[in-house]
Each structure stands twice: as C-alpha cells, then as structure tokens.
Length: 160
Length: 266
Figure 1 (cartoon, rainbow over the protein chains, first blue to last red):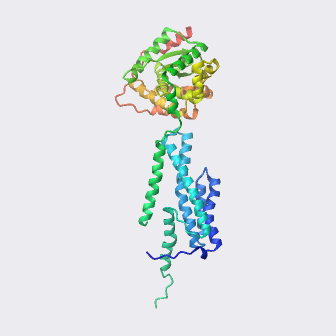
Figure 2: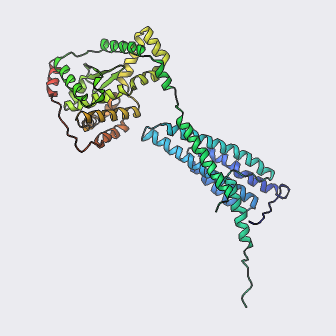
C-alpha cells in the first residue's frame, strides 16, 4: 500500500473545513424534517455528497463518511417505521422482538448523533476523524482509490 | 476489498447492535407480570363474586331448563379430548337483545339472549363460548381490569365493594372489547378447542360474517367482534384454520330452535 500524505489542519482552507462540518450538521436539519420518513435524510445526504465531493479530498472524505454512516441508520429507522405502522394497522404484534428492536434503533440513532457532533467539531478544526468502519471505508474510497487512479497515465503521446 | 481492521470493525458493529437487540428482547416491558402477582387468588375470588353480584342484580338472568341443558351439552362437548376438561365453567344468559357475550373473572361466561336468537345453530354458539373461555384461560379479563382501573382501585373495590365503581367494572366487562392481540389469542384458543371437540372452527367465521353483514353499522356495540378493520382478518383466520386430514365435524346434538322457542315463551 502506498504511503498517503494527508493535508494538515493549517493547509486546509476555512471554506473546506466548513463544508466538511456541514456534511454532519446538515443531517440534523434533514432529520428534523424527515424523522417519520427516514428516506428524506438519505436523499439529502446523497445530494450533499455529490455537490461537495469534487471540492477537495478533505471535504469528500467527510461527506462520504457522513453519508455511509447515515445509510445503516436510515435502513434501521425505515424498518422501525414500517414495523410500527404494520403493528398499528395490520397486525397488533408489539412483541418483545419489536420493543428490543425499537430500543436498539434508538441507541443507534443516539450514537449516530453523538458521533456526528464530534466529527463535525473535528472537521471544523481541520482534523480527520474516523468513525468505526465507515471512516476506514470513506478513507479508502477517497484517498486510496483515487490515488491509484491518479497514478495512471491517461495522457499518452501518439504512437509514431 | 476491505482491510483486516475494516472487517473487524464491521463484525464489531454487527455484533454490538445484534447483542443490543437481543438484550432488549429479553427484558419484559411494562409491569404486567408484577401486577398479576399482586392480585392474590383470594382477592380475585372476592372480586369475582362482587362482579357477578353486580351483573346479576342489574340484569335479568334467564333461568330456563331448555337453555341450561343446551349450555350443559355445549360445555360437555367443548371439554371432549381437552386437558381443560377439569375446569368448571358457569354460564349465565342475560335477557338482552344485543348480540353479545363476555367473560368475567373466574370461570364465568355470560351470553345475551340476542346472541342465541342470532346464531344459526348450536355450533356457532359453541364457537363464541370457546372464544370467551379463551379470554378466561389467557387471563385477559384480569389484565384488562387492572389495566383499565389500576391495581390500587381494584384493591379498593375488593375491600370496599363500592357500588358505583363496581357498576363501572361491569360496564367495562360488558361493553368494551379486548385489544386485537388478545382477541386473536382467544380466537386461536377457540379454534384449537373446537377442533378437539370435533366442531368446525368455520362456525365462528359464519357467525362473525353474519354479524358484520347484518349489524355492521352498529359494530361498536358488539364486543365479540369489535375493531372492525380487524373483523375481516378474524373471519379469514377462522376460515383458513388448518384442520387435520382426519378431522370430521360432528354436529352438536341439540336443536337451537327449541331454545329460541323457550326464550320466546318466556
């Protein structure tokens, strides 16, 4: 694996830091709108990611990390909403499994919120802050994948 | 694709949240269980007597040999091939044109004359009785009263025998159904009991279907098939109940018309 040189906080512009922080903070605004429909958060996260990913690798990394960590949370919330609606309108099955799942989803959301705030703080400071699992995937996607692409020599002289 | 540490993280996350789900699945929510323990058998016995006295004093109870023999025949039949056969149930028939039946604390089942007139045959009545026995066996009545009134009020009623509150208790027992989960559990209990007694559980569907069709607009007052969006589901469940291949339905040897005539003579 090639050595990757990461930009240090003083080398990152304030604009980039704010955009990176925005990737996490934007989630809170969308959560407020989309709580009953978790898909709205996901759409907002995808849109934010596609707008910001070309800005810089630092912003790209934080947007992707935010988006990736949003994915399982949204899926869990979606399942919780569907299960609840189904219980209310179709089968009255508020079982132990259901309540266990709802509490687990609540804890997952709480952890997601806490770690998003921490990540937003670090992003504003120009730090790389890695979430468990998602941080590694985002880093791999942004730095390792792209650096290998960059090393390819696209522009070639004509074959004479 | 992933590095070793990334896989480790993924496994950790899945295990962590899976374990959380499992742990919270094991915890019993609500204090239903504790509340059950607080109401002793003695308390229950007193409460049962107070309720029965309240209902029997405020309603006209029919005492008729033909009606009693029919209930006896149904009772014996429902106990066939059933481990529940040692239980003794007391049946009361109330003079009331509503199509209704309900269970109270203890092993007491109340039927309205309206229900007897409405039923097509004895098997349909047996299906309703089996359903009410389901509520008794699953302790729905006790749980409902405690949920509705709270243990403190229930205990106060037991010790003081307050007439106003007792009337309220009777009203709740007669006029309000159980939640859908409890109705479904009582239905399932009834299907099994009917099957053991060689009575086709479809009889319950026939009665409920007729009830929805003919009295659908007044649905709220029929606690035996309350919560209407759910009634079709309950009918479907009765129709779909899987009977063993060797199941043969045996009719109950009692002519319901005789009972209806006896009630009309009264």
